[in-house]
Length: 112
Length: 113
Image (spheres, rainbow over the protein chains, first blue to last red):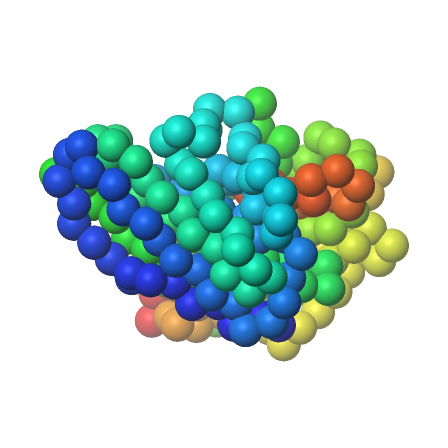
């Protein structure tokens, strides 16, 4: 299994500001995934982050809104830019280890 | 387009009952079918997973049944306990390409004492 930590665990932000979420894994992984879970909803993939290359975004998500960094094989960041109340969600980091997917504890974001 | 359909949306059982959650998929290329358990305020935790080369897998009180021809799989929880009350998500993925995980919409399970 993989142990994944995220920072911050929660935050309350003002409209128009940006928040960067950090994800740290206890082992080296090729791909890291960022998901969004809106209140009471399922998980939706935002993007896939490979070390050393540009992130791949899913339909409906764009780099200007959700820039991602992947500086090494154990760390990634997701920035939620120019936030609006519709961005209030739980943001989850995930990794694929030996064919099994594991998730971090999530970052609960509230935008006022 | 939802690639994994999950039902029911919510489920209430008595302690000791056997809740069953069902999922159906469309993409025959899927070859990995995990179930996740999520408690409020927590990230999803991998519960059990199956690949299409077997029809059933058991881990403790949790069993996955898999029907490849019907493109369906289900989660059974034996001797359910109030501590099993959580939201359960089925998912599917396939290697080759992005390897991304596609989720069902979730089932909120309540186990009454």
